[in-house]
Structure formats: C-alpha cells, structure tokens
Image (cartoon, rainbow, N blue to C red; front, side):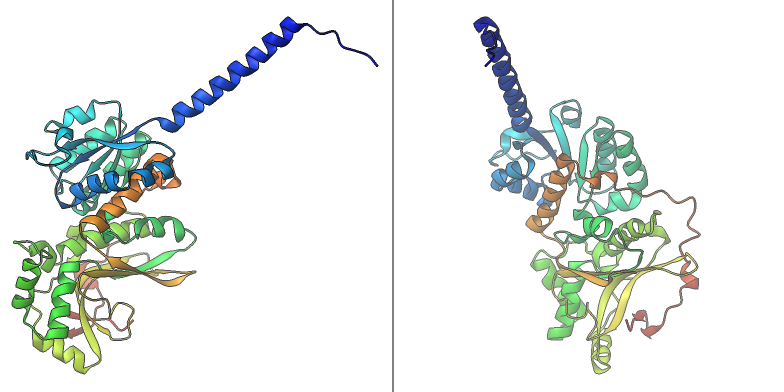
Length: 388
C-alpha cells in the first residue's frame, strides 16, 4: 500500500487555517446574532408607553423571534417623567434620534399630522424604519411616505392605525393576496360602538351613554373625531387604499356620525329585526368606481357585525376567492395597540415581504363616486339600510 509522505509542518499549518476559519466564522455569526436592535419611541402617551413596556416585559420573546437583542434606546417627549423607570431614556430633541446611526426603528405615536409628519419624513430619509399607530397621518400622507420608505429601502408600517390590536392590514396584503378584494365593511371605532351598545342594551340616551364612555376613558373630552365619524373615515380610507391600490382621501368620503341617533331610532330598528351600527363601507363596483362612506347603518340581527358590542371592533373583507372574512377584537387600548406596533417592529427587522407595502397616489378622485351619486337606501333619517 502506498504511503503519502507526511509533513508535520504542513499538517500543523493546515489545521491552524481550519481553526482560524472556524473561529472567524463563529465570531462573525456571533456578532450578527448579538447585534443590538435599537428602537426610539416618539411620544410617551397611552400607545407610546405601552410599546416601551411591551419591549421591556417581552424582551426575551422579541429577541428570540429576531435572533438579536433589542432595546428601547430613546423616548422623545416634551414632558418630563422623572419618576418613570425609563427616565434615563428621555430626550427632547428629535435630531438626537435622527443622527444616531445605532437607531434602527422609530416608533411614532405622537399623533396628528404636523410634528409626526416631519419626524416621519426625517426618520425615513435617515434610513430608519418607521412604525406608527397614527391613522390621521397615514390617511393624509401615505403615498408620499410609502414612496420615501421605498426610496430609502426601509419599511413604513402601520398595522395599529386601523384595528388597534386586530390584525387587518397584514392579512389583507399577504394572506388574501390571491384574492381580488372588492368590499370592506366594518365597525372601526370602539367609542361609538360602546355608546350604541349602551343605547341598545340598556335604553340609555345618547348623551348619557357618551358621558359613561368618557368616565371610563373610552371617549375623549372632545369626542368629535369619534362620534362624528372622522376616525372611522380615516380608517376606511386606509383599508380601501390598500385593497384597491390607489389612495383615497378622507375629504372625498361621505362621513356621518351618530350625534343624531335617538332611542326612537334604536327601538324602531329593533322592531324590524335590526340593529344600528356606525360602519365604514367601501366597495369597488363593476365600472371600476369605488362607493365609500361612513354612516350609521341599520343591519339585520343575523349580520356578522350585528353582535359585535361594547368597545370591540369587527371588519369584514370580501374577496373573490375567499368570500367574506371577518376580523374581530379590541380595536383600541394601550396594550392591544402596542401589540400591533410590536409585530410591525419584528417585521421591519426580519425583512419580510411586508416591506413592499405600497400604493400610489391618485391623479384625481374621479374613481371615488361622488356623494350625490351613491345609490344608498335609507332606513330612517340619516341611517343607511344595509341588508347584506
């Protein structure tokens, strides 16, 4: 048998190279796995504080899902919170966040469309992912911000902007991707649903039910955005834009609230086997136009949304393959909303296809049917009759 000559020096050198490569690969893997993900939360109100608490409480869970450690590095708020366990994280200048290369994700929970708009644009332009619960900002500026995110190869995600803790945007965009979506109808505001539930179940007046909602923290001191349908209008615009691919602005949507709903209306609906709900409605018709509105609606008691009560929300999406699919859960609240924000944080870092979330701005609003041309049937006064 032939024996290869052995050169122990070559063997030692060869083993050394192998060991070095193994050590190097191991180190490189370790650096990649343990690199810290840093989050900055803008606004320490109900939602913002919930996000910080969730990142802290479920930190191990986040890290396990990401394969990397994660931490909230900054909290931006003009108010002082000296007694907060997170007091050392507070900053008052957004440029600290903007110019810190270690910040991967900015969570915007400040609300409105002024400072939030500025901060979001600056964060995206700086190459940072942005996650938000701000439905006003998304409804008003989504096309611009989605385009800016795509330009900078980052994510702009807003699952929490519509259903609070209810997953709706991701399921529509991914789980129902094989469907032509043609209709969305839903209870999208917990405050108004609570008020109407009290009127239906307990026979209390609108004013009394509103006061109860305010005492429980379900309604703001100024409840206009909720009871006048503005909040629902923003949410149905976001979902309709996602479903139909072109942005629909709230000012082009017929919007009516529940201020004028009386107990007489509630009782009359009950006598006819119906209940009154504030619904957002959007449907793409055969002519390509979109019928979209927000209004109190009388729906049959066997309708999928009829028994959704109190502060719960429910949204039914109709696709050509799946038919009707209803999403149900708590549409607001500190931790349910933080849950949706947290899921978006994970999606940003894991680099899922959700980063391609996108729709275009509309050249005009002609594809949205005008208020006067909507073919609506009315149950009573301003209450639309929906039988299906």
